[in-house]
Length: 163
Image 1 (spheres, one colour):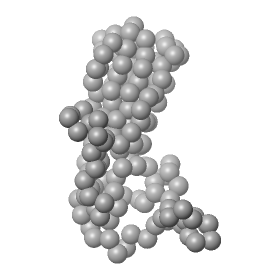
Image 2: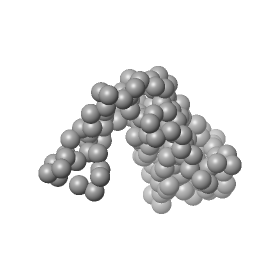
Image 3: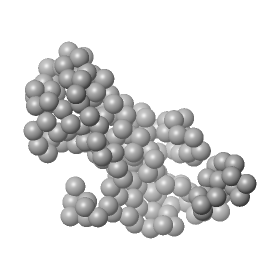
C-alpha cells in the first residue's frame, strides 16, 4: 500500500519488524515554536507566571513525553532512551523556540520521541499560560536532524547553517 512500511499488502496495519536491523546509536533533534503575545513572553522570562516556572515544567513534560511516545503514537516501537534534553530560546519578541535532542542505542530511530518532546513541551507552555494569552500558537513542529540507522544522516536544509 503506497510502499509505507506500517501496512501489509492487504492494507492492514502492522508494527514494522526491526529485528534484522543492526543496533546503532540513534540521535534526533526536533523543534517547535510557540508564538505568543510579547507580554506573555516577558512573564515567562521573568518567572512570574501564576502556575510556576513555565520553562522548567515544560522541559520536564517534554522529557517525560519522549519516554512515553510508544503510548501516544500507534505502531511506535518502545525504546529505552539514553538521553533526552530540551532547550528554550527566544529568537524574537513574542516567539519561543523549543529544541529537543534525544539519543538511544537501538534498532530504530528516535525521531518520533524528539517530535513528541517538543510538541508536549509546547502544549505545556500553552496550558500554563492560557489564562493570560489564549492566542498562543504552536508552529513548525519538525525534525531538524537525525543520525544513525540505514537511512543515514539527515539535516533539514534550512537548519544546515545552524539552528
